[in-house]
Length: 129
Image (cartoon, rainbow, N blue to C red; front, side, top):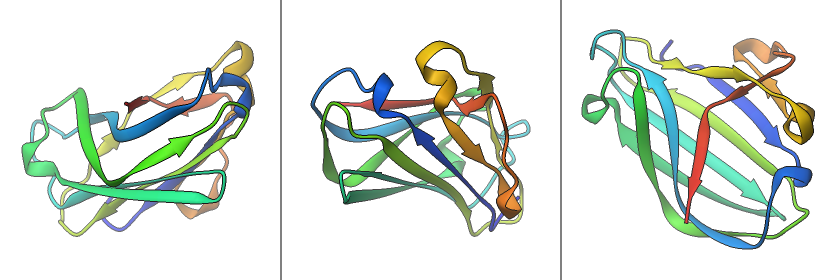
């Protein structure tokens, strides 16, 4: 729903190597292309953060939605990533696809709106270099 956020941690154990992240791609649902407002992503690693916003009117239902960061974020091996996804403005909801996590990824944490932990699940988020 508009105005709500989710937060997550991608553990250091799944960070394969040093990289410079330029955007994030998130699998979303737009309820038959009706979602409006902006989807904002904030990604932090090693004490540095970067933010990006994209208007949901440009998103396609049940597809990956790319959000360009305002500045590149350097990530290092063995540094966990923290992220926040926020629905800003608008009146129609957006869905964030979650998938079960396993193996090293099982130590991810995901917190839904209102601070509710969501065990064993992770947002479908891809970091693009």
